[in-house]
Image (cartoon, rainbow, N blue to C red; front, side, top):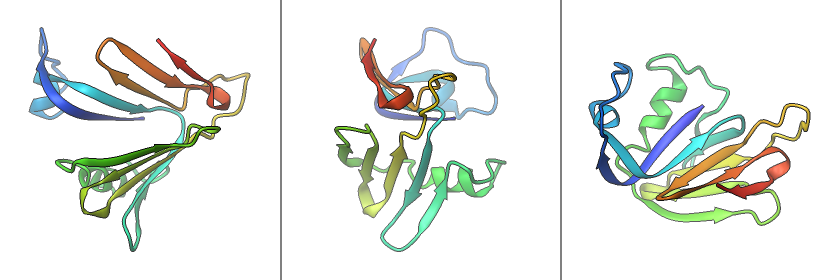
Length: 133
């Protein structure tokens, strides 16, 4: 699972004590956020795959190091597949995040990802069912 924050920083009413989070993450909420849950994803640039959802996520492992590449980059474009809700986010300097909605098992009903915005959220669930909460 991966959580990404975008937009303005909003001061939290109470800081989160988790020492594994950055100081900003403990002190502030994001205006927008993307929570990748049970779906496959990868980060790439024009010449290589940088990391993906099945990479080692230990400290300084390939997943953590790859995700760090996104810090401070601006989102330049977002594409959403109309049928599958697969997501493509293009960042500055040619970095791309691809999210694949591969949760299809109706018995498990795992969500693929959730996008949070002020006052609502969009959930892409099993079989790419899109709901607004």
